[in-house]
Structure formats: structure tokens, C-alpha cells
Length: 621
Image (cartoon, rainbow, N blue to C red; front, side, top):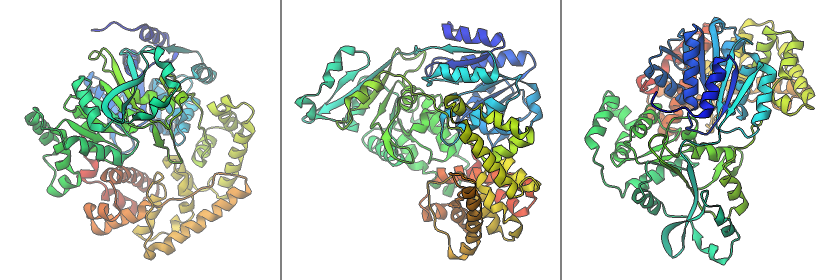
């Protein structure tokens, strides 16, 4: 071993070898992954299997590659991809593991430990329930190694884990392996030179926040000046974080336009050709590779969820192998991927979270700054945040404390989880288990509400004959899409491919897009709405506040794709990013395969084949 273990790593590994559950809270880049690797080594040597879970597919892909490079025969399960599913070590998304637990998958019988990476995702409003369900319902003999960088109320979280899983060791470190210097930067109106208003390394400068008239002259630095400053100060590679895809792209173009080609052109061209040489002209143009290569040849790139997966993977490869100096990215880059830089810049701390525009939280700030500082390369990491005169100075003080936000439960009860629980437990046992959620643990006086929701939704399922219909029950328990309920009332009426496509689209993840329905399909859609309204009446009668709402936004897009078989035309017609299309097409492909297995309706198989083409499925794995 080439490096000396930190004390917290030694403690965690010792606890793992003592067969304890372990909760590790330590900064990004501090070496939590090494602890997980030792847990894998320990349990595999004892002929016990390991499941390593991550919150996002991109991180699962990265961990799969990492463990393979360490010499382990590794499986990968991410919904749209299944590689070596019977391996002793499986990397999976948390939804896959949750489904394995509820279906009593035989592979669980041999599992010694589950690694929950980025366990603070438990607080995610859309997906956090999955983490709680895993911790609550996993077989009691399985140990847990939970990893996170951002949990302020760690003792409360630990006590909850202990109440469910038994003896659990909390191992924590507040020391970053690469110290972080956080700086609030600005320029004066008549002078473009960048200077520091406040720095985390200098506590004496707090008096500067007693703003007087001279601070009226502060303004945000120009992008060109910031890049020059970073280049001249030897602070690259740098990640510029923006909370908008459009801003990420426009700023990357702006930066590239004044930057000369770099010396690694031949090496870049060789790598580029290895990955993209087999694309035809149409696919090449759809991926916008001419413009992207123009940026990459100048050591600049941008990264966001609207890019095709193969392009994102290639950019991540270029950045990790030091072919990129300046990367413009949205916050998705900060979610666990191993993409460290010497410095990061936050252009503006305002973000739109789907409901409102707000300032970023302390935990979000820690996630972003966690990219700054490369272990074994940098002596210090730098995080720059641009000055904004409209922000209260006390907010900056909190941010500079580098403390995470509290982890709050987002636990909810779905129809699918009720069906799964009542197939495994008596109703009284199931209610007892939901009362063991982290939500209940944090709000001990509100258990009545959870029980009420459970009983109400259980009654609705009975009224809709879900316990008598094996197909209905199977659809919800195997897909976990409550939004299928209205369509399931109509499934036997379906005769046309368009109906099954509409049904499929009602189960896709909620879309930020809204596409109109062609009048030809309005009668078909009206049937779904009528069915939804009937279910909503039952929900209202049973005092369910959150109603089942179907969203078939992608029907028009995919139907047009079926008719024209022309992806470029479809993207232009609906003003879509290719990355959003491919990501949703992969979800539709995965879901249509499950529906074909459940119903044996050939139209679902036809839809599945529609998305089984080279561009949609292309990956660097």
C-alpha cells in the first residue's frame, strides 16, 4: 500500500472486520471509497456476496469500471443494463436493490454487506423513500456500510440506523485530505482586477462585511478575466458551476472563442476516433461533435444532463485524463462522480429547484466544493464564489462555515410499496414497519398520519380489485409506477400500438416538457383522464391529499419517432435535447421490456425494439 491510512479509515475498516454496521461521514475525496473496497475484499474472502449501491446510473457505471480494474468480476444492474447479474459483487442503483428486497430475490441469501454510497440521498424529495425502504426491509443478517459527506444531524441518523439494524459504528472525519480555501471574489467597477473580499483562511476579514459605501463598487468578475486569473495562477483544471444548461453551453462557447488550439491535438484525435469512428454522418451531427471537438481541442468542455450519455462519458474521460482545463457544468457533475479539479467557481448561488428560485443550501455548497482539490496532486483546493450585492452578508458567513445541512426524511407511501409490504407482512406488521421510517423517528408525534395514508391507500387498492388481479398487482410491484393505475383500468380495451405507447408513457418519470396531443388521439387520452378522475374521487373520499396524476408528455414525441423513424426531425420538431430524448428512451426501453414480460402483449415488444438502436444504447463501458 502506497499511502498511510487516516485514523477514520483505520477505525472504519476495523469496525467492518468486527462485523458491525458502519456509518462513515467524511468530506468528499477523503478516502471513503477505500473503506468500501476493504469491505468488498473482506466479505468476498469469506465467500459472501456484496451489493454496492449508488444513486445515479453514471456513478454505478464508474464504480463498475473501478471494481473491474481492481480485478473483481463485477456485475452491473442499472435498469437499462444488466452485466454479469450473478456476480459475487454487484454494483446497482438503489431502486434495483429495493426491488430485489421486496421480491425476496434469492441472491440476497448470500449477501454479507450492502454499501449505500451517497446515503444522504435519503433526503431527496423524489427518490429518498427508496433508501429508507432498503434499510427498513433488508434481511436482518445483512450488514450495512453507509457513506456520506454531508450529514449534520449524524447522531440522530445513527440512532435511527441502530434502531433498525443493531450495533452500528459512527466513524467521522472533518478533515479534508486536501485543505480547501473558499474565496468570495469581485472586481471594482473601474478596475477589472479580481480580488478577494472574504476568504475561509483569514478569519480577520469578517469586519469587511460591515459594508460601507465602498462596497457599492463591487461587481461580478468577467468570465474572460476569471479564466485568465485561473490560468496565470496555475489553478486549472477548473470546474465552472452554473445552474442552467443554456448558461453552461453559452459560457463554454464564449470561453472557447478566444482560446487557441492546444498541443495535445493528435492524442485527442486518436481517442476521439476510437469512440466515435463508427457513427454515420447523421448520428455524428446529432451529437454536435464538430462543435464539441472544437472546444475539446482548446481544452474546454461543457457537461449537463441534456448531452447524450456517450458524450458525457467521453467528457468525463477527457477530464479525468487531463485533456480538459476548463469544464462548464451543472450541479449534476457534483453528485458523487470522481471528477476532482484544482479549483471550482460558482458563478451565482441562485438555483431553480423545480418549485422556486432559491439560494443553494450548505450541503449543496459542500457537494460542489467537494470537487476542489485532487488528492496526491494538489496541496490545496480552491473554491471561488462570485460576489452578489443582493445577498445578505450573514448568508456568506454560514456558507463559509462549511457545515452541511440537516438530513430530513422524505419518506412517502406509494401504492406499489403497500402491495409489496402486504405480500410480505400482515397489515399490522406493515404499519409497524412504516412507523420505523426515519420520518417517524424525526416526528414521533405524527405516526397517525402515516398509518392513515397507509390504510386509505390500502382500501383504494381493495376497491380497485388489485388483490384479485394478479396482472394489476404485478404491474405496480415490478415497475413501481403508481401512475399506471388509471391505464390499468383500460388495458383490456387496448387494441392499437398507440394505446400501449400512451400507457407506457404514463409510467415514465415526470417530464419538464409539455407536448400537445394531436386531435387524432384525444379520445384515447380522454379515457385515461376519465379513469384518473375516478381514482381521484376514491382518493378524495379516503382523504388522500396527493392525488394520482398521469403525465403522457412523451407520447407525442415517441409516436412521431415511430411514424418518421427520423430522430433529427423529432428533436427539431419538439425542440428537444438529444440527451433528454436518449435518457427517456432508455427508460421507455427498460419499462416496455418489463410490460412485455408481464402482459405478453406484442406491441410492448415492438416499442422496446424501437429504442434498441446504436445511438441510444451506445456507451463507453
